[in-house]
Amino acid sequence: MSLILRETFLAFRRAPLLSALSITTIAFSLFVFGLFGLVAVNIRRAIGSVAERVEVVAYLKRGTPPEAIAVAQGDIAAFPEVESVEYVSEERALARARHDLPEFQDIFQDLEANPLPASLDLRLKPAFRDATHVADVAQRLKAFDFVDDVRYGLDWVAKLDRLRDIAGAVGTVIGAAFALVAIIIIGTTIRMAVLQRSREIAIMRLVGATDGFIRMPFLLEGLLKGLLGGLLALSLSAGAWALIDSALLKASFFTPAQAALGVAAGGLIGLAGSALSVGRHLRSV
Image (tube, rainbow, N blue to C red):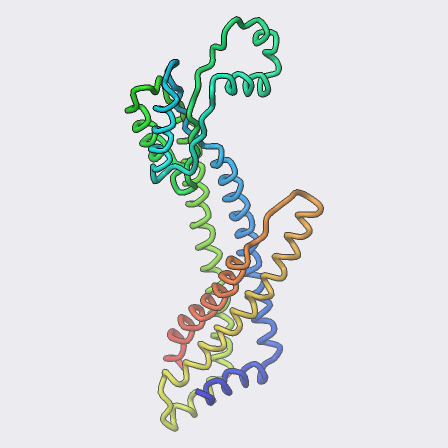
């Protein structure tokens, strides 16, 4: 193993310019991938902030005993999809309407009686803020005798689901395309290294070296180049994010876990590119 590691690092020393060029090329290809990742992260978080507004409102019949409401509130809170349940009295509903709809103050002042019913406002857990789960929760709420009506904006939630699906599909396709381009670039640089050392590889074969032994330094070289390129791409992405965040608009950056995953992805892409290139071209050397 020590011999393989020595051969790997010797490859960097033998051709420092080529190695630097390879790492820089990998870094810029991963940097483009990272920029797309930043866009995807911010779109996902924007959709998530909109999804936080998804709620189910169960309007209660007038005269419902408080004891029945309290029991039902506990039962509904036990639903696996429900994050919280809030009871809104008739008086609070009117006060909220007056606060949220100032343009109707004249109408509110002329009211002789409160026309707004009490309600139970449900917030769902993030994993269940989609049309299917929202509709299922609403259907269960309708089973309570004292529930007069249930509102949850099915059309709006369905549009949010479509937006989420479209963003996910586009992200997958474009991300896969960028990853493929990075693999091709890395594979090309490794191929250059294989051709540069063709005479050395031929001598190693003459003395009995197996293809696995010959291949391993190239695989480690691709892994290291991918990791270094990933680190450089992460630094470039951080600089681009800081510029955008300060000069254009407030944006979110990768979490530490996402950043580490991106660097690891660079290493895996480097390893994959090396494996494809060496496996294809080692036989022709």
